[in-house]
Length: 294
Ligand code: GDP
Image (tube, rainbow, N blue to C red; front, top):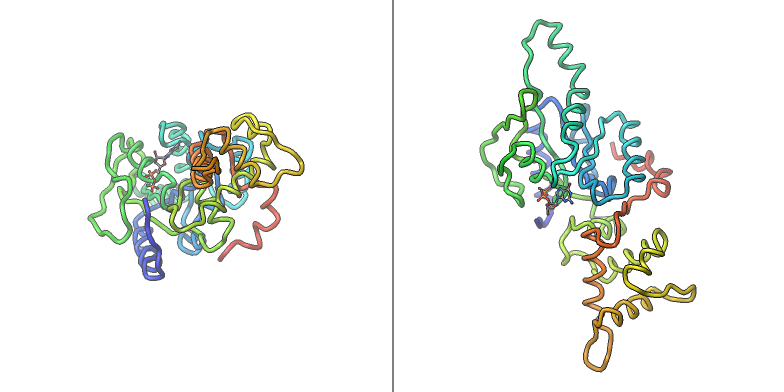
């Protein structure tokens, strides 16, 4: 899905989510486990405020487990209730239910002590485009409800989806904008398919991806594309090698760089080469608390 975010859209999205938040006990903040920080909305803490929050690291099947675990701990330390799931295949949804209960326990205990009758937990999903909001809603609803690719600003009557006896979920997710102003984040968003190709320089995204592989998984890079990695090689030499290996050539035996670029990006996006987390905790942890926007 593609949305062009303009200041007006952002303000409207924020207003809508703020309004919907009043109806729920807990927020499900959905992020992509391959970029648990870079796939967050920059103002999320400001928008959600003190409402209990379950941070859902989705697409765990495509990320690197050891990194996902570190980010889980990070979110826990922040006072959130993190879970890691795979919405596409409906995995670990039980843990999501448990986290929702833990996050709302205090409120429900309070209601109980006041003599209020037990009721279902009310929740809504928020997140940037393409993190899997609709997929998760449909899995929880056990049928197709949220149209994948719904647009912000399209008002329709909100409905509650019953998920077992204990949870009620708003059928429309809150769609918020990503942090696309930052160049590195923009490349990571592109590598995970969160933003459309026309708003980034694809060659820079592919170069970023190749450098990531050189630094983090050089053996796999060599093996996957059947190429050599020499000390003196520049990234462009790798494009040449991959192009030749795959027969991506233009007239006059010149490398078809556009096709090689698309290939690298596609292979990374679809986790063909391996499962990677592009937000590396050890590299980002020092800046984490300073950059938190409140
Ligand atoms: P939304 O824009 O946040 O509603 O995202 P969608 O639900 O449309 O999902 C975007 C893409 O991610 C779709 O192609 C989904 O099939 C895919 N997707 C969603 N969740 C998962 C997951 O847990 N694992 C994998 N591998 N793919 C997922």
